[in-house]
Figure 1 (cartoon, rainbow, N blue to C red):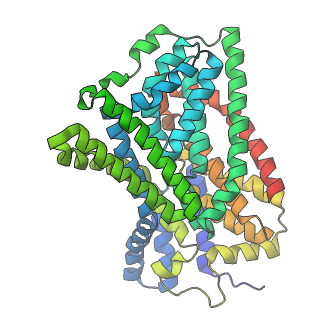
Figure 2: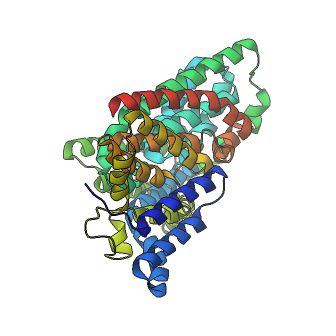
Figure 3: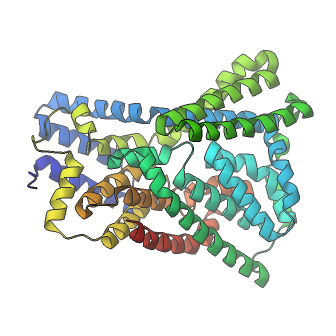
Length: 465
């Protein structure tokens, strides 16, 4: 198939290279993305006013596409604040303290709990919900604070966030950029997420046990005293019976959501809406019960805190997502009908052209997507660059002729494992702070296990394409 590549296509490629370059240099890409949107719009329309308007329209389009994701994360964070403030989280987690009797049980119990909680609450709130309660217990069982931080990082910011099966924020971004249904990316990511998770956590545990045995890592009593305590919660807001009631009710409601998703075949936006609506109801029930006559005002306060978190996380994502939406159907909606008549979208055109020029293999495609994903994670966000990974995955899949969902999932996993809170020191601060460990030391500890995991996962992806 003969595809006409215009100046729009080459500008798009040039700015992809620029964005990657800025990420490698650990510089922000917002201005680069805005410049790319403006230049593409100006080249397409020839109108200065239309090009300036297109910048705003692209942001508006990106926010519209991502709004349900931003909302559900904001609401879940708001709800998690109520659980922490009222002490319900302590009651929810307390049964698992009995399982933590030695370093091995501490590592795997905290890790698996962190993974499960992160699927529903997202990792940052989950660190607060879990860390303060179980850190002292784990240290008494012989697991160093650094080991607790590693478990929370690798299982939460690694496994849970890279798959994001419940809230579906990550697959939404990558699937949109690749022009795929969200469920296709989720399905393709399942074997890769668990390969990456199993290899990385097992490798990390091996090195952890080795260094504990050698005496390189030791527990420290003062860490227990200095660590943030769950006692800071306002425990008098609810009676013990009320805490137990909500500690049972909250997991049951989310379990019912998962069952409903399976029975009613809810995916994408429908699944997100169900989780979000349930979170709002939980927030209202707990806040009105605990704060009584101040419940109306406290509900608003919790929501404000949640929205501040949500837009802080997605603030850097919106400009880069706005740029990469131009590569697919977003171009016509944002700028207008200015592509050649035979065009299937900028990314699709580039993929077809690439296939006709350079013979690509699935091995080259998989290695490239892992590299691109890792590069996009260098800013420490994990989310700001996964639209780029999705876009490149779509391009390579067209060139190879298959494997779009697998390549997209691979790029997503690499980006989030590197930037979402396992390797970049400034992204590790929440877990490092609650465990009172050095984020740079934590990043160094995670480095080899994550790299081993990425290599193995890339090999598995090659066979799955």
